[in-house]
Amino acid sequence: MNKLRVAGIGFTAVAALALSACSGDDAPASGNAANTPAPAASSPAPMSSSGSTGSPDGVTTNADVFGPACSKLPQGTEPGSLDSMGPQPVASAASTNPLLTKLVAAVKATNLVDTLNSQQAITVFAPADPAFAALGDAKFAELAGKPDQLAPILQYHVVGKRYDAKGLATAGSVDSLNTAGGPVKIEGTGDTMTVNGAKILCGNIPTKNATVFVIDKVLTPGTTKN
Image 1 (cartoon, one colour):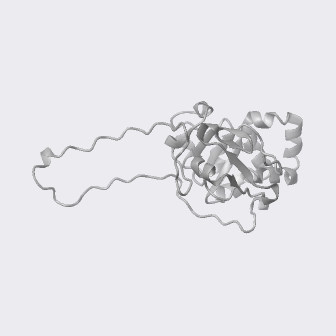
Image 2: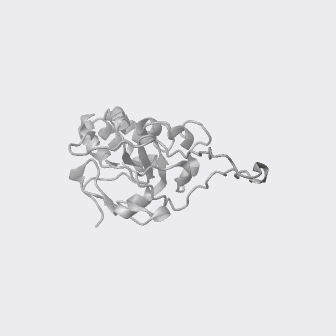
Image 3: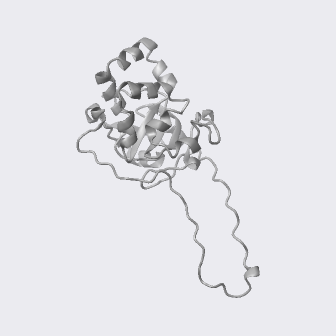
């Protein structure tokens, strides 16, 4: 568990989701109140196709989620749905996400569940199951049996600051918790964004302490695209 606690990286506490509060005007109304139109009910915000939210603290909402694989998530309040994952810390949320069963197994193999859940504001690049499948079952089993080799790979998928898609695009590159692995390069924006060449399958997923980007490849430390 200590492998993810990289010295020199501090985490700023952020809220799990940005909640909008509506406050009424306590001052007496002038004139005939019946002539004052009631505020129109707000309709749910549409799912973003660009992932451009520009949140200064990297916190997103369900309306900011984008990507072709987002439709594969359970709906409503079912385990693994956006509504279900949002209030949970990231490792717990990922454990219910049907796209991330291999990643969850890797995190458990390195005993990093509690470490991830305890962080305050992080970004997680989460390889989908087919990304791990590309390694082959034998290689995955080998890595799972060698936590000292697997942990640095997982660290390379975690950034010690919370970003949304627009924040990543603005940054251009970000440092992971595996600083020896080199920076993670961000190219493109929205639906065309890549992370060290990996495509985003479902991005801007909100959890209690992290913004998650499901990607189509396992990132390898030391192989940043130039």
